[in-house]
Image (tube, rainbow, N blue to C red; front, side, top):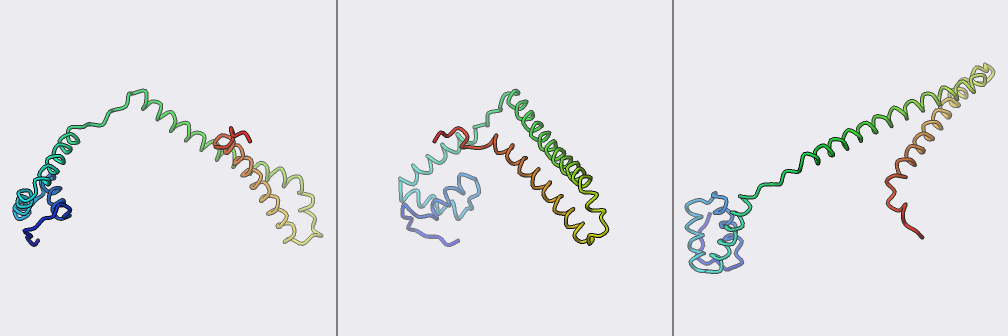
Length: 156
């Protein structure tokens, strides 16, 4: 650190030294530099005093603890969201599996047809499974967005 004798009011170095003083991290050389700047500029002394009062207030502040009911409500929301998330995953998986099985059964005669090439039969299975997955996805998204739609109460 280099010492400077002139400290204009906007000098960032002096402000840095003030913050170090407030945090009790200032070195001996820095303290001398700060004291010199405070003697030369009384406005800086007022600014430092203002920072010290602010630090005293913030050091004595303690965050308010929310009432116990708030925590109960918080955990209820967490559990509810977790349960619903798991529920949607299970419903989606079940619908995909059962829907695919039902469609597979419905077209099993077509698939068992040995006169048709195997790649056509498997392509049809992939097509059916894809439609089931897309259907479940769209229905689930519609139900979810219906609750969260920010424009649902907007009248044109």
